[in-house]
Image (cartoon, rainbow, N blue to C red; front, top):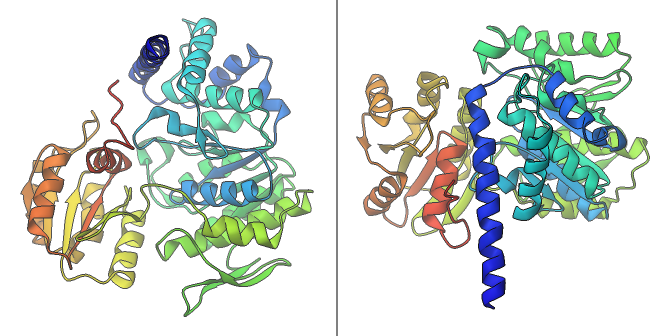
Length: 440
């Protein structure tokens, strides 16, 4: 037992040391381009060229669509890798195979191997190295399909080194304008950069100008174009079930395991993608579809973590996501008062995020996660005065949650939102045994 404890201690030390070094790459910021990721992978024999992938870009919903596809494909008997970002609590969450996170010793080992081959003249960014890490891990574990979520944009995102079976663009809204462009068309061009020669694109975009752009990009690359709302239709039925009317598939009894009205469109996009994958030879039964969409695990998205009072966590971090969240909270939840806990990153469109959610709140508590990009909660509260919701400031997040619980009665709803970093820290506060904070 003593020997086993020492082994665990050594493993934890090795993991923390490796991930700490990896976090140090954040000093190189965000740099677009594929050459550094390609060079890293070349040193490992280009493992990404031997795998099957699904590539997902978009403003919101990437993780939810990825989790839906993951769940159905697992139910179909496949070994499925999912690479997503950011993580909520533990770095290892970014890399999972059949819902199991990468083991700490595996993560540390791959990081150290990558460290040995990086060029000091061309140091990679944090995201470039984690992307290479995911592709190496999925190759070594011989996954049947790897689901890869774009970090930012698409065209020059590190993930765009892969050649996918199908490309997905969930939706497009204004975000990261300093990197992707000042208008919706410029942003759409960047996200449309994941479209590959001859590879199907499935999308949930709605804006006519964006639809036209993506169609033209697909035409230039001879890539079949499929869109929710035109190629396939869906409805949220009075029963709460999903009705889907697809290329060939028809369902009127799909139960979704994720809450939120916005998830119905995400599910329709996932179902469209599954139909495309069937055409490419994957066997996916109706039973796998139903079971997969019902048995969903995607933390931090309208996730109920407590009752009496009800506490909901949601990582909405831009105006579009916050608008969808506010709609779902207002229409699908029964509560007397809404007590809002807000922590937002300083580089986000804070004013419009506040505009979407504040009218719904009865009380507001401003806070911040322990992360260098987090906005000062006093600044949030000052901005909120314009909307008549000054509220109060409580730090750290645990104090904000304690204050909200003290204010609430059993019929009230506490909503923690504004950032996945805020949600992740809240999970650690509310359930420190299952979600211990990673002290790195």
